[in-house]
Length: 52
Image (cartoon, rainbow, N blue to C red):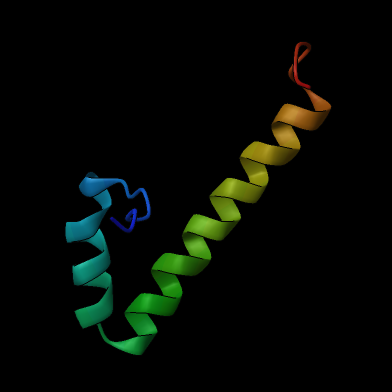
């Protein structure tokens, strides 16, 4: 029996909506997500006292 890859089911509707979006909307949303993720990562590294 082949195992299926693990997925996060709550992201499926968001992925479908993103796939159906216009390219400009898709790039804007993905760029915003990357920027927020980067900012949070920098915050964890520089500010948070218990970060790994």
